[in-house]
Length: 348
Image (cartoon, rainbow, N blue to C red; front, side, top):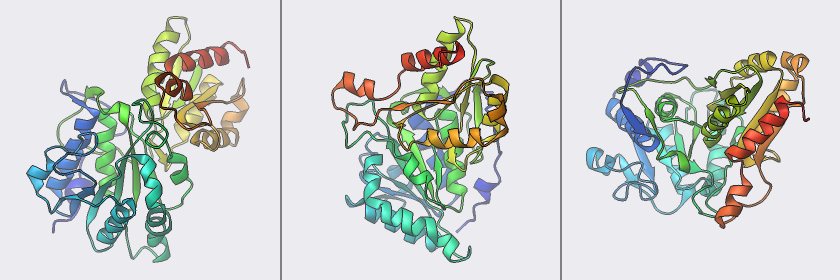
């Protein structure tokens, strides 16, 4: 079997510098990353429910069965615990599996395998055993899928030492970060928002890797720092355009990986703007935004704050089926505009 040199030796990029007019959807960018990784290394294979003939619940793996065959694109039984367990076992004997959990809600059924096994093995064996698995899973609301198919559970996994957690917000980022995650020797939870699958943006051809643990400044600004994740990045950028018409310039930072978290660009930005707002979809209580607040107030940014650090997050309710209630349960563009405006104008 070839080693990972084809993946580990590709260009490392941090801030997007796109010299291409080619656009891909977020789903197409995921598929292209999977295809490139599988072409580069025979140890990379896919497993999950309905990922073969059906192409996955959201069509992301469409065509890969025909290209790589049933040995490397494996339809599994309806058992998330079995999917995770098989991936861990395969990784321990030298493979590099990419497992798909159909909805992030169902990852709850694989928690023992991921939290007690995958996250611990490399540490407990002194680095002699490695678990290079990637668990891809679509998360978030907005599709009318109701309370059991719409959750954002990233904070659970950030809390577990030994796991890496990635939440790409753009087609460019999802391709580069997925290739990085597949090349990494540690287990990675790779979270893709359902509403992002159809969004399109420029994506370079060929291999490129975006290092895990590097935040990206999506928009420069002077009046307020907004740290946003996943779908909230695009909503925050839309809000920034509205606010710019009022003379309010916000800086938008996308952590991209929640663990490891690259906090330095966030601290530098807050030192510049003096104000910070964290926006995420998951419920506010125990959400990842609280960790960013804690890191900011423990950093030099605390001395530069002109207002309390604010969080704008999902309500502490199960995601409703009703479309209007579903929208009310998580931040929308208008909510971000209102919260940012209030912070900049000193309403807090």
